[in-house]
Image (cartoon, rainbow, N blue to C red; front, side):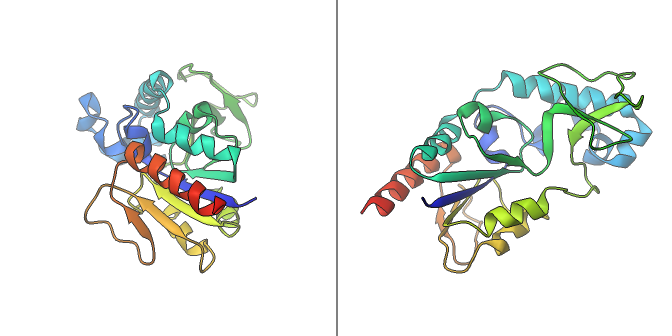
Length: 229
């Protein structure tokens, strides 16, 4: 069974109504991303950071998987499928994808500030100041902030090295180290990028200049046809 590996980014979730990080709008426009998503920001004002992620969590819980999420999940009927996502929402899982690796963490989980191995499901609940882990340390969002290591990178690279087809959707490949995963795809493996931008260019890749909801079903249909001929 052929192995399809997908690298997804914020563009796919944006079509479910979730704003990208730099488009969150509202009162958050008065803050920089480093105020809201960095270790320094957390140290300076943890209550502000918790409020920001609590608001994002509620948005994510209310959003629904879109046509692109569902089309990727449907591939599992005929292929082995691995999704590597830069997104912290659970829309891939709720669409039915069974193998999802979150590079940048998960909005619906909390973790200890003193022991990163202590991770707790939130099931939509907020994190408040004073909420602690079993060791007594304040809980924080289980997300990777600017300036922090991405602990799942090696696992993601290994998945990419096993790809028979590689799809990039919803990301402009500007965020590192995730963008470097394309270099772990074996030579000769077909690479497809779905992105509506006329400016995006990826060497050696087939580019479908459509949104995720438009392009993923088209690509999936062609993939099925190519592998059943």
